[in-house]
Image 1 (cartoon, rainbow over the protein chains, first blue to last red):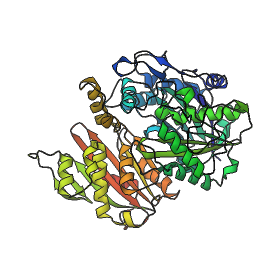
Image 2: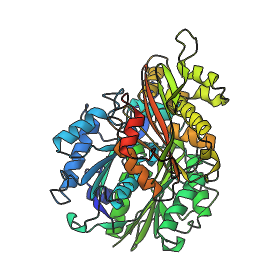
Image 3: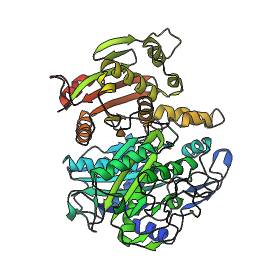
Image 4: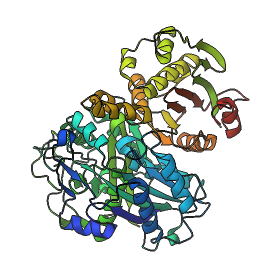
Length: 360
Length: 206
């Protein structure tokens, strides 16, 4: 069996998973109007960590995260020869070093924490986080490593804000995924982490079970979602089939739910084709914004917290169905014992990825 | 067991398929080196002109692999072909060009922004070939045969039957691109292992 746990989140809502979960349980958002942050000095809604240092933000955040995570597991794991660090990110330390966004930060993490194995950066747009967790599990299942620390981290920069503005993809209000009045994304920044291992005893708090996940390309468009949800459909179908999980076993879906018209519509079509429209579902983007390469890890960590605390957290901002297929979007927090949950992600480049976590 | 069934190298001066040089750069030409290749190979895919250099290189070499090893397009279901690409500097060249659009040219260019992710090349190849398989783009400090051997074994044990792989080293004027195909059936001597992969990759990459 392969375990997942030691989840952590650093976001505008707090610097631990527990603080983030408390904020989510109170339905607080990290998104606020940031003056002059957009192109031509327009104000934009972002989920921005206001206390970050000016320089080396990526290295500082990932290092803080490694310290937090190592406090939640056996102290020998981090520097073990049987441990791999996998980092999911789209832009790394772009603000300081556009020509080499990962090289320096990763090298200094390696030296500072005495990591034995060369860390792997997975940079697959918005599916990076789910893909990184799946890759970690695959490495352990293949017995190449015994433990993997997966850290997802992305920062807000003029670069990404101006880019999404140029695509007219940014909402002028906090994002409201799956809602009829949704207008686009709110960008976010943050860092998430999970530890994956074949050894239950390394975790200080009881872990959960991570099943084998999969990915599939849409083969449709580099920046637009498939109209039929083909890639997402295929990835979820494969993940359910290889694990012999049926649709009625899934207790909760942590969807990608960016808040753009086409993405959320695509997801509704894919979930309809998978007979998953009755399953309680949310998007965490209303709390964290879209944290790009970090999203899959932050949202998996948040989902694990929901399983532990036995609360289905509502999909913040949603009030009226806005997709052609009606999904069971969670509108109020409620107590629920969750056993099996599905996490999905979709992104630029046609990527789609999915994973399943079960309570032990 | 699996086999390296075809491979292409592309550097600043020439392009080779399975070790045979098929094109050499004309320094006098008005066309970019990648455009020279596109024309000389008589490829027809107008979208090529919209792509960034990372995607252009992936497109060109994947088309050459398909010519050298037609089994890639005839022997597999659309979800049995995976792609595993990597490089050192992510999409740095496109990132610099997009930054220039808003810092020097007055407005952020959406056409440049959509290429500021290294995995877009995987999307371009998937779209062209209608491949729905597993995809991953990794950023590593240097070409690492172990990484490819380990991860391709993992993909192959989970239903993938062919993996198109690439190291897309493109920075400024420096071009060092290596694309190779791994399949379950192949010729003795070309077994897919770190030794053979390192040898085929050549000294320019290691």
